[in-house]
Length: 238
Image (cartoon, rainbow, N blue to C red; front, side):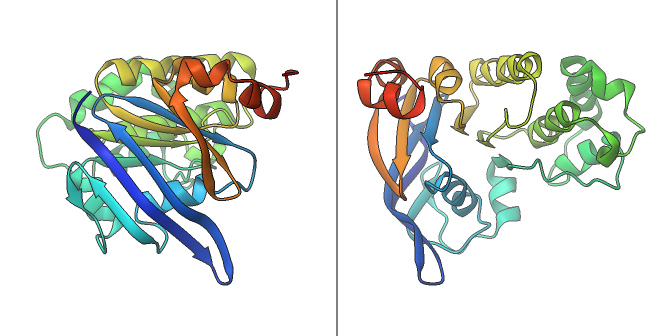
């Protein structure tokens, strides 16, 4: 894990007069799962969108050692970055199969059909509903499809924004099992998640964000037992 998949330096994101992200520094090493936790409105989603090329930003972002200033989102996708956004961002009037095809639209190799079958093996529910419109799926099925669609691009770095939001405990367990499996395959992951305990239990390292700034960082196991994290994000008394 000595190579760097993502390096962010002095990242700032503004919405008019409001600075949502304030000089954030973070990195994700190759093959590493990094959790970014914090309260609602802390700037986590804005950070992910900036990294994915979906928001204007200032500072410096390097993806696999290359600066990405001014690089459009579709080129970042082709370079190996994929985002599973909060709210899933599916093509709701397309079928499950069509959404998976859209996930592979930057690829020109001969393995797309095999990868589609692999996604159906990982998420059997999607195979059962392959001809169903994405907008008619349950919340859990939509989250599975959003993850499968992102994985169809064969990403080297996966950005996940609140994958457990609105899901039942059983489905959360399934989604996090997939996140762990993807990480074990060597794909670098930056995970934004309000369920701080779950995120830190599977991550290698973590960052804590508050009011647009990184206020704590360290190994995930250490953050999990940090009294400040326990009190603010785990609902435990310090």
